[in-house]
Image (cartoon, rainbow, N blue to C red; front, side):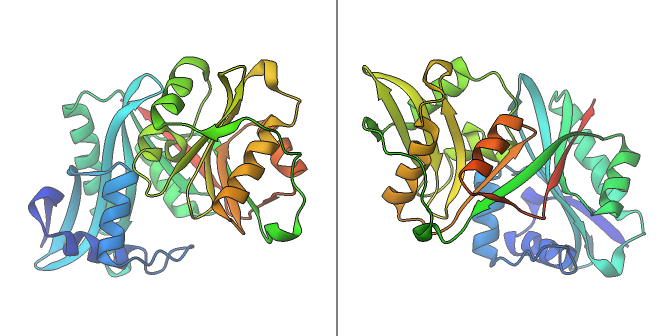
Length: 282
């Protein structure tokens, strides 16, 4: 008989085992040690054990759903950080039951919407989420630049200096009124190890910012409207690459024609893998 438990009541290794089993046949390899899994999924990803549930067949973990809550674009939002079922236990209603617990927890916490990302091409998952009431709202595209030592990027400008997370956060709060994906927002960035932030100063004022991690992922890039078209954005990217000695860089962002054109101009190539962002109002 399948039993369902809140993840706060089970050992971390059981949550990890459920995740590994559920993703054993996934489109993308998802292999983490228990320590890596816990650090990532209950760290920067923003999931919390109290909002997550596991399905157990006696002592065997057979499914898990992770949940995290934050104010996202002005609404209290429950994000599904993952939902996966052991292949041997699929089509037994376990996913539906885990999702029901997920939604009930969101309602109990006063959330106004549910949110998740799903890989394009994972048609079974997309169909499942649509059956629960989710709708596809945004495309998430991934662009990468490889073998950077052989590339020539933007012109160099002066006045690019390290800035604090607080400055980045204020810019996000006060000047950027556009959709950012979950992994590019401040709450995610502040939990990433080794994340560095740089600003372009014009007469002492920050007119451009970039934030990236040592693995070469750019989470945040912004230039003020009055400073655009002057090579500032490409200079910020170049500065991060040189300062962090990166050989590969990746960026993920939702529908944005200007950003897509900018990165293509720098030589970034779009990855075959992409995602949908899906929402459900509750």
